[in-house]
Image 1 (cartoon, rainbow, N blue to C red):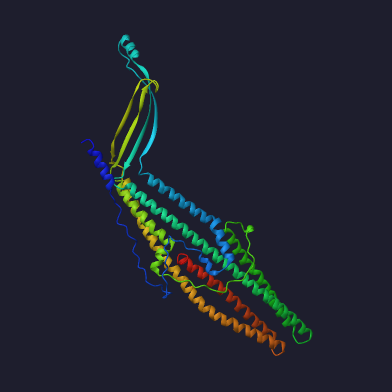
Image 2 (tube, rainbow, N blue to C red):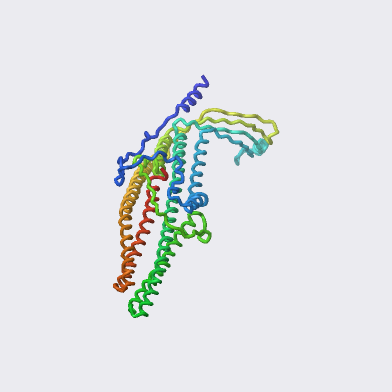
Length: 469
């Protein structure tokens, strides 16, 4: 008979209750295909699987080295990792809340009691004083308490914290992917500046020869002073453009230094050519994108965490039930004097009858947090769709523009060659030569810019699709 209340409490603790709303992913109207890509290929990995070295599709050793340094030394990435570790520590604490707590206690009390009052005979006052005295009580003991999670408050809190940990881990992957994309795009912009510089160096050398040729023809009475001035202007303008490329290169080099955890003075890249091959990235289906992108995964898990915290807020309206135990030794004067031992054990229940609406406010906050998490999740999905469509359309349009630009480069080079031959033959004025040369230079610079934009758009598509495939 005496064990029935305790058995009932334990049975309820094992069965438990759950007050969280039924969990479901926020509803989204997801299309089956991208608007800009009908021939998509479904990606196999989910967000928790390694993405691999996706940048290896560019076959660039310098880029490989930059990514390796970023993984080890980037401070933003290290900060995200540390934040995830903080959340993991909170999960450990939430799990340990299920276990009993115990503590040692020690107490020392000085107590004096006696009769008080101004009346009475002298004998009675003296008797009261004789009966009064100072008592010194010392005790040592141990107490233990175990909260029985009848209503699921601890379980909901632990589940919410677990979802927070998963969201933080997804945030780490999202930060890593964003930084990798920034590094790749900065690198290709730097290499585009190198390509522009190489082109302008060739043009400056060519224009220097044209100026020399024009000066010789003027000495022979064939060319005019205006022709010489025009050739000199063209050479000086090209030299200024050559110097200007250093601004972009220096800026991108400094950005790469910071991304790899170094100061600009500690980082440098030798000039090299810009990649001519544009790799093909298979676009995944929008439904697969939801499982692939780490920011979408993080948003979904924050919705789950908010859902569990609603359950914890509801459980707070019910009594807190716990099992407590205490034991120890109490004695007068000192612990070694004659005294007695004591112990206690039994269940304890506490119900907060009046809190001036604090629990209702906490429940309202939990509901609002869930609605915010749902809205954030949906916005993240919409942003993912936009980024993917933007990258796909940019690649498609730039590919067509690049084809047309290649034709323009070939035509401009041929026009430059013909104008040069006719000028040397004396059948064409020098202004026609400079016009053809400027057109050829602009066409080639535009072609380099297009190649750089296509490489950066490829990186943007990789990022939009959640990394490697």
